[in-house]
Image (cartoon, rainbow, N blue to C red; front, side, top):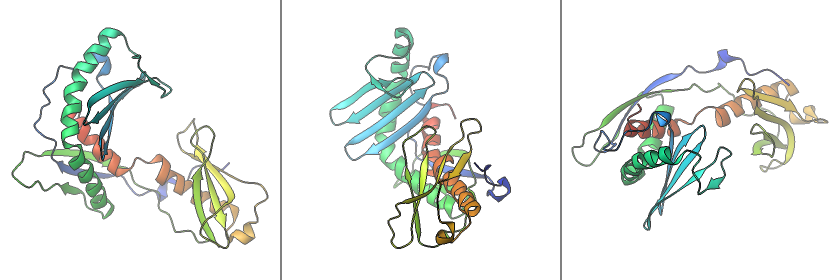
Length: 255
């Protein structure tokens, strides 16, 4: 197993400013109980509604929003769906009292916010540091500042044939680096990458009996390339997700 990639090859983190339409704030809702002061927020806009997640160490509150209305259930610490709250009844009631207004507020603007987050991420990829949405009429906007992590600098694949990667079963989110000399559907495993549970960084290992001469690169270079791929695509937070989450946090009043 090789150590993680040289941090000197990482692009620096960047400060990014997103000017977003987050509706009328502050949110009118009961206060969050102290134990729920720092939720992990996420949301997905769907063609038939929305899914909104409010997570904590002990579990998650999941809302489905559709034409039928708003429904909720819980996820336990292992991510399994449940109708039973992982928290005491009184705390759950207070959390639901806050979550109702939050979910209604988010669901009304989530489609626009999702598209703005995607566009802002594209601006960031171009090296721009400020994004501003363009509402059709005068609207109070919110300025949200956040830090985006720098990616590992990588060359394209310089070996022979074609490479791809696929998720595989196992602990710590492993992927397999696949290769094929003839066609663009790689199927021969060269190496495996996963998250080192101790450091949170990529760990990699070559598969046995690989013909590295046929691959066109030495084993060490392939493993270094795989480290960068895993870091960029599986460990670093996606800018679009970060921008969306920052908007949700501003709506919730925790940013």
